[in-house]
Image (cartoon, rainbow over all chains, first blue to last red; front, top):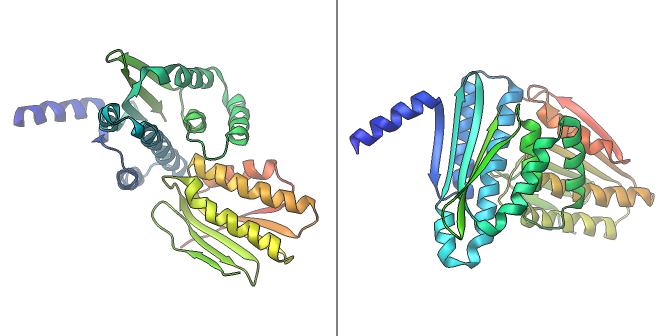
Length: 181
Length: 127
């Protein structure tokens, strides 16, 4: 294992990784890692606005994953796979912060998510604001949907969101998302 | 009606609703696991207040950070206030933000754009 950790360390250094978490995302973990991230960035004396945006994107990203996992609770087999698949990585390269996440999802959920992501990558800041307000207004009561979170992340990012799906098998795929600030 | 007092946690704000004074305060950070569940008793209290008394209502927000589902819940509250305001009820919103950390001001500004209730956004210095 010692050799593996060394390889990991080199990878971390090369990618400018500040923090990462892999495993089951509980609200408690999200809170703790979020606070640790905020402290770290504050300590780097970054601008207030950037600190808040990083924290904000972290929360939206991890809560989206958590909410998705909760949706899958009714299917025990898939659930245990999906539930333990979350990864979030935060780093800094070329003077930009990036937040990346990965999680397993059901293939049947991909089209709807793709549509939301494609939508936001086409819009400028002002169009994003309009879409944000419309979605805020129209989201049915108590729904759990990634829509608003995705739009919010797109508004806070300095570049368009980067994403990719990678098929695992006939039922599941990996979803990767990157937000840069 | 009883007052509503809920202590803050890392991810949920302090709720201090006073029936006698009609001053309702929400203060802290808001990113609960389930905003709908967290804000439901708060919204129910507000509805009950509005139904059982004709006193003026002052809604004070000092939230430093809100996730998007909290924003949705706060919008639901504002919709209720806007509704009764249109019927002639005396309601007002005051939103305090930290001078040193004003990114939440943008959230407040966006709310204010779509509401006709008296809405003051005030800078405050926090020690």
